[in-house]
Image (cartoon, rainbow, N blue to C red; front, side):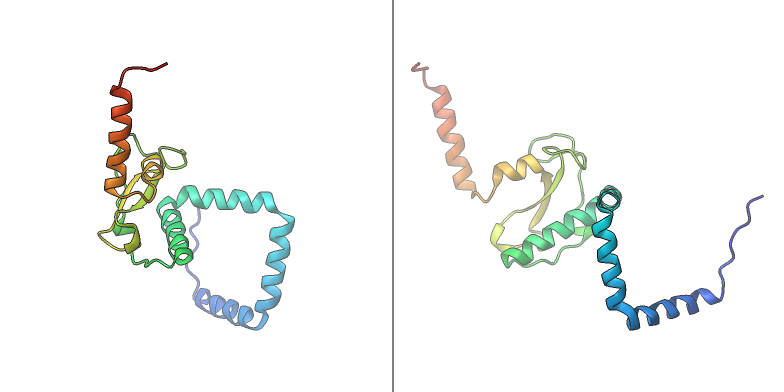
Length: 156
C-alpha cells in the first residue's frame, strides 16, 4: 500500500521561511548557484534541453520576446495568440518541434509592427527563413525572375 503524503500545515510556513532566508542570503545563494552551474555544465545543459522539450511554446515565445527587445519591437502576444498548426500553412510540411526546417516558427506578417496579436502566424522555420524580411512585391519579383529563367531555353 502506497502512503499518500498529506499536505502539512507547515508547508506555508516552510515557504515563508525559505523566502525570508533568500531575502537575507540572496547574494550567497546566487554565488553558490553560479559556482554549481560552472562546475556542472552537463547537468545544466540536460536540464535546459528537458525544459525546452517540455515547454516548446514557452520557448518560442521567450525567444521571440528576446528578439523584440533586441530590435526595439513591440511584444504583446501570449500562448493563445500563436496556435501551432499540425502542418505549415505555407509549405504543407508537418511541423515537428526540434526538427530544423520543420520546426514551428513565429512569423511577423508585417515585420515593423512587431509581435502583436493578429500580426503573427506560426509557419515552418524553413518558410520563415525563406521569407526573411522580404515584402510581397520582392517575393513576387524573385518568383518572376526565376520562372522566366527556368522557362528560357538552356544556354549551356
